[in-house]
Amino acid sequence: MSSAEPTPRGIAWRAKAQFPGYRLPDELLAVREQVRRIVQDEIVPIEQRIDPDAPDLPETDWQRLAAKTKAAGLWCLGAPEPYGGGGLDTFSLCVLLEEMAQHRMGLYNPGCGVFGRYPPWVIWGGTREQIEKYAVPALREGYYTFFAITEPSGGADPAGAIQCRAEKRGNDWVLNGTNVFVRTDKGKGREGISCFIIEKGTPGFNARRFKVIRTVAEPCEVSFEDCVVPGERMIGEEGRGLSLCLDLLTRNRFPYSACNLGVAVAAHRMAIAHAKQRSTFGVPLSQRQAIQWMLADAEVELRACRWLIWEGAWKADRGEDARVEASIAKLYSSEVLGRTVDAAVQIHGGYGVSKEFPLERWYREARVRRIGEGPSEVQRMVIARSLFR
Image (tube, rainbow, N blue to C red; front, top):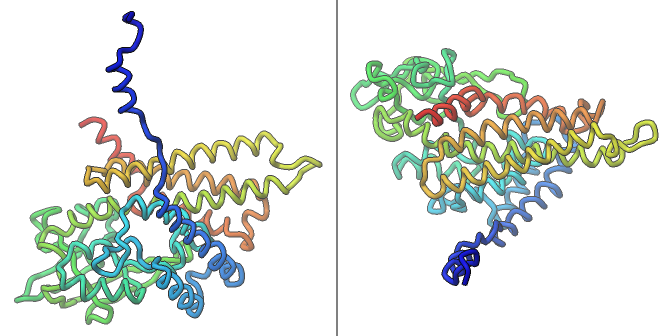
């Protein structure tokens, strides 16, 4: 046998190392199809008959569809199974959220809550008693909850920006400031930040809603004035609040990115359909090179975006350090979303900014996605820092 010919051992090695290819599990594909049908057959028709800026479905419709998803086993699929959720891993949740977000309210209210509403992820770092008292009822009933970390002094640098204070008095803490992550020890920097559970109606706690360009999930400024909080409402250990928050926020960037992708896919699909049926000067838009290139560029970016999200979520599920992948997914998905929706608006012309179509709402809300969950500049900083370690 000549040296140019492979040895039998080499042939065997190549056979064992052959890559089997990618394929989503059949069960996950089936659940994704169930989600798609509910979104497209139930939610989209309701959205078409209500205020285009509505933040939620009418209560009767929400109750009906929530009962339907509960009966189908589609309720709170991303929550831990012991507490009433579906126990899905991050990867599977991302696959479903891409489909769940493909409707008018989908960017900030994927599935309009009919697949369940989740408490802030930081609650899973609490005690079993805290989870049973706060997280379980919120999951079961679909309660609205909130999470606060940004302050007027800054949001991208919570370790340096948090000014809200908590003073220990006996077994209680007294809060003053405008946040819920507070400094329990000013001299310890990030190790002096703790997290508390605040119940609605607690004396000294106030929330003031303020308007932004998005019409759902409107932010509120929360303030505390001598607000007394029992010690058992601290989540995790004293001084570990920021570490707990950042760990969970990192993992949450993958589902956040999947929603970006889902809306971008829906906008892209609308642009393709419009280009096929709309003509200018006797020629369909789909035959115009300028339009073809806009759509081709979007297709490439959407496919790349999906793989970046999937790879990072898969890595996180394996318990590996996925902080850089989370920043890459969040950065790229939010910017691809903006470019794809912008192109879809341009292709639709005047219809693109009409409230008869979801594009104008997506266009407004997409701008916020480059800021929320860490602005693009911070994500680039995280990625660049990893290159020079």
